[in-house]
Amino acid sequence: MRDTVPNYVYVGFTASTGTLSETHRILDWNFTSYELPLDSLTKNRQRDKTKMFVIIIIPIFVGLLIVAAIASPLALKAIQRNNERNIRKEDMENMTRNAANAPRIFTYRQLSKATHHFSRERLLGSGGFGSVYQGVLQDRTTIAVKKISATSTQGEKEYLAEICTIGRLRHKNLVQLQGWCHERDQLLLVYEYMPNGSLDKFIGKGFLNWKTRYQILNGLASVLVYLHEECGVPVVHRDVKPNNIMLDSDFNPHLGDFGLARLLQTDSYVTTMVAGTPGYLAPEVSFTGRATPESDVYSFGMVVLEIVCGRRSRGIMEENSLVDSVWNVYEKGDILKCVDQKLEGNYCEEQVKRCIVVGLACLHPDFMLRPRMRKVVQILMNESEPLMKLPECRPSAICVSLYSSSNSTTCFGSNIANGNIGSMESLPDEMTVVYEG
Image (cartoon, rainbow, N blue to C red; front, side):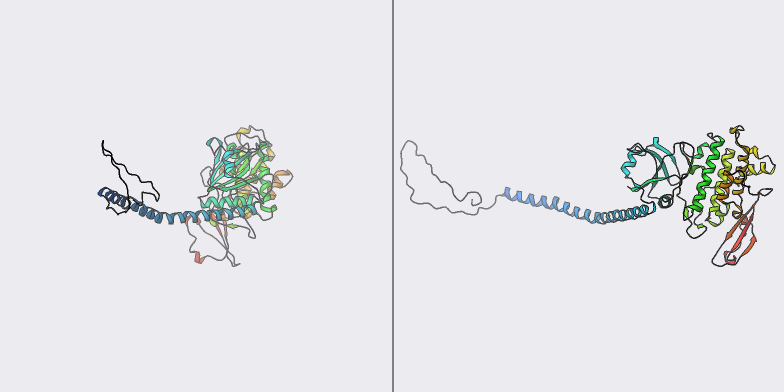
């Protein structure tokens, strides 16, 4: 009662005697409370509540503890991975800001919107490390967005190499870097848009008149002179080919895709893993892995022959290759026979002859006998400039120089194709290997 009846209550009495009348008088009263035993129903209810707590609440609590024990390491790992990603992003942002003279930083949302969420309709082409999409910014500027996956280590190297080289270069025949974005595990580079695409789609497929072809060769030679001699620290592109030569609305060439490019710093070569495109890769690079300005000259020579002849190269080792065909007509003294028939004779014969001689000279298997790009520019721009002399027949020896810390010199011949070089321990400190093809 004490838990139910309040402290202050009204108490009354009622009684009935039927038809008779009676008088009652209360002389005294007293209230006493006693603890009554719980009935069985109440006991059962309490037991059910306890049982429910034991069966439901405790297992749920234990389950939550187990889940927390399992999830905690995963959550900590996710937080650590996110922190590492943020630190890595900040490091890359700092590197790219310094390397690229602070180009514009885009957000992933901006570039996704500009390219219609990287739709197939906006895809311009795909390469070894990513895809290129056409985009339109809010200010109506048309851009080309190169998307590289951040999950690829090589892709990251290409991303940084591209920014660290092309970001600091300024030349009218270079594709200009407009900005970059490193967000959502994506590496994005933004370039000026080239309406006519790459030179690749015009060789053997589309058509370019001779004036345009000659203009492309002059622009490409000019930008290689800039990279090798005029941009401060020389740059070796390492992948000069039609796919990486972009054409603007006036068909002016713009060299792009510097993902394989390397700075020479104080050395005259860069030693790395063999990188480049077969058919455009200088033969000595395959043996030594050393990229030099002369290896870019070799690639330029292959592009020259492709533009003049209107056909793609399949490599010098292939039977009846482009280089074989040009050398054959050159040795016979009928050099104009290799010119693209689509031109139908509408070209300057003197310019064509000079281009073919330049191309063959650049493709010399001995890198020491290839002309410098400055000499090439002088020949292409000045008809009175004397041509370099070519051998009477196609040279077949590949000269490879190997260097070490010593200054001693040894020259010998070896059939490299058969693997008869001998033990590396027996090699001299510096040597020239000659491969008779």
